[in-house]
Length: 141
Image 1 (cartoon, rainbow, N blue to C red):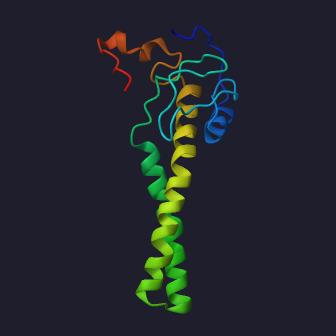
Image 2: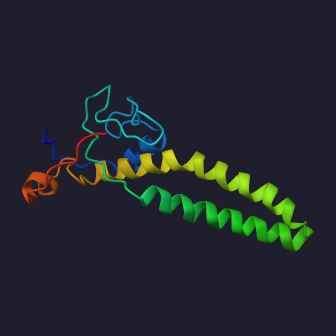
Image 3: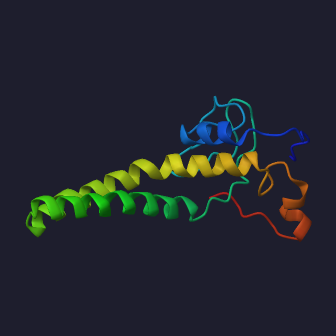
């Protein structure tokens, strides 16, 4: 169902709610039904969330953030302490994996919140309705 409300949506609030894994509209319902699977709708306010198209953006942002942090930290440790390579491996591989897993869901939530606030991909913009372009929406997994 298309959202008939055309009032402005607060982008920062929607992204903060998404970072917390909450519905961008009400901030109460859970956005995710699994680790990275966005719920079809908010269990609290029934806002349709299946329109989201985050695709590869969350992974791209996570790689950029984690890469900048880990590379700078590894260079500082190398120039300061010059530890053997096994120490670098023991430190940076687990840290990279842990940071990536920890950031992936919040960043995806923020992107979905941003899409909702901007009325992208069917979140209230009739021009983004797939039926307008003769596109059949993909079935839910």
